[in-house]
Image (tube, rainbow, N blue to C red):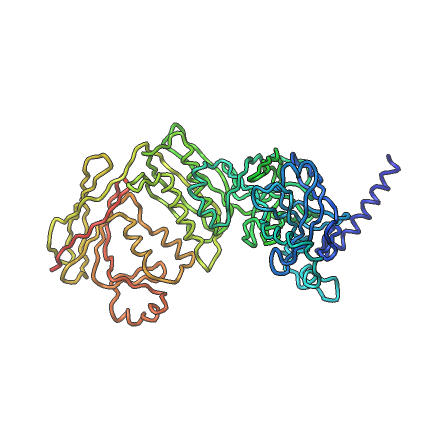
Length: 596
């Protein structure tokens, strides 16, 4: 043994030295075969995991090369899988990214299949040169000298495939679709996925049939070509993970899938190893049952020809803590969501909805007193304080909470000036096992005439759900600047006032600081508000409100109005008072007072 050890070490060092030039230049550390050398009838093998963590080989036969099948100058290699397992299961969801080899050279990644119900294990392969472009893009390397080895894009441009063996092959190619990536929703109710399905779809996520869980346990098996790898979008007490197969791996990064996951471009998604519990054959949609395991880095690119992960990159997720009080004992839920403008709002909505609906204490008549905060790095924290109860619309309480959260997150991300760096989210809900909402039935004042500076009392009557009538008296002062004539008084819930300003016509989106300021100035839905409205214009510039703007000032600012940097409303809210109620308040009414 002592004599063979030095020889083994010497051989290993020599092998690593041969890889160093390729690694230094960002070139693959494995031999590859260009599309120009591939022709029908060639045989090889592909690697994927059917069970456990160790890849297994599948025989393949090339049917042909389809030029421009994936996109302009993006070819597809059409193959047939052979062997007892692939012929039994077909092309399985989660198999995308499985590396294909011919003559010991890496050809590309299994990425496409014929639509549902096909019994033929025919698949489309994304050429490896197209996938290698992702690493070049991520490193932002300058174009290579044309006198040297041409980059992958130039290879595709200068070469052409051998052509289609038959017209039927071309027809077959038209039916090819990306292999589904099983997107497992663990801890989510079926109702939650269904309720927010359209929002997930708009974020690029279509839930695919899949079963699995997240163990976070160490997995001793190394990541290698053919291994299962997962992208985790939500992790913790709830999980969303998408799993595909590793195509290429070196000491720095890996390539997987062979097609986009979400097509978000540059991303920051936790990358984990995965263990395949079983592969389930199905004529409709065969898929792998997956357990995600230990984290090994981050996916940083999500492009049309695959996804790229780097082992040295720590993911930047948003930690969420949701605490529910008012039950037998407080329940704490901890999870993290992806920091992404398209996905985060819907992920926050779906997770909150699933947590609340999963409580034993949850029911049709539940009310929540809600407090929360969103910590945005470099800005004041976003504060939330509201109540949520079932209303006449029939919206479940959990859905009302979720929609309110999603709306806030959507507005935080919807600014063209700064990417929000959200550090944490804290949500506290106090559960009340009854329906607590009240509708405004009527309002009046104690006088019909008043002078500027007078104090008047507005009396409002509210009718709670299955409760006795409530009367509230709210004192308010007539502004000393109030002109003679009719003064309109709006008695309403908080959302009516906020909605009037949010619906003001403007094409300009606010910057992040102004958005957070407006969110923090919005009114609570458990208060009744009295607003005095003067018949003088009110100007809104970003989050700043200027009531009763004189005509001379309005003329000076008319240029801002033309560019819609300033929004002008016909009336000014010159004074406001409120009273809290332990109910969700709804309704609005206008009353008038004559100012002498």
